[in-house]
Length: 243
Image (tube, rainbow, N blue to C red; front, side, top):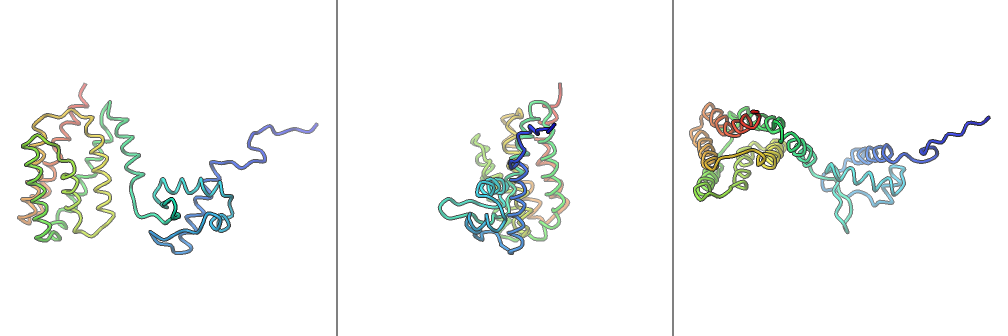
């Protein structure tokens, strides 16, 4: 007696694995042809021929690569090799941070650990690298924080600019992107914590202490100022973890 395979996948293309295979083939194509960020990829028809896949498979693969910022789809212009981005990391960490936020803010604590470790670990290099212009810009940003804090206003945009400016002179794009990525995660997840009205003023003062250490050219003082800067949010996380 002949046995009939009733599997719904028999004789059909498995969409999930196939998309991943085509996505890998497109990445290989980019590498083989030494394409750089911003370079235009072939048309959809040419890409289908190059990787040996159907239009539907290529479209699905491009969606996967676009979500990872490996390619960038500009409607009406084509598909381009994407620039370095940590958006996927931010999305994932933000979700995990919000998911754990109701209980113990475990992920947020780890994000704070990474931010503090980066800034303290690079304190000596920051001191050696920051020029007069960058120091003046950091001081101006600290002034703006203190002004807004005194008026009871938020200064998230200024805080972001401050930490990026601290890393910018190092000339390492990945460091700058990591700094921004972890800053974004903290900025989204931290509001789930209970804060006090005076926290804005304290935060502004801690940024002023960082500027003072940078101006003094004191790496030890900078490491200490960075630790003090993250102390309030660590205290908030500890309070939230209590029964």
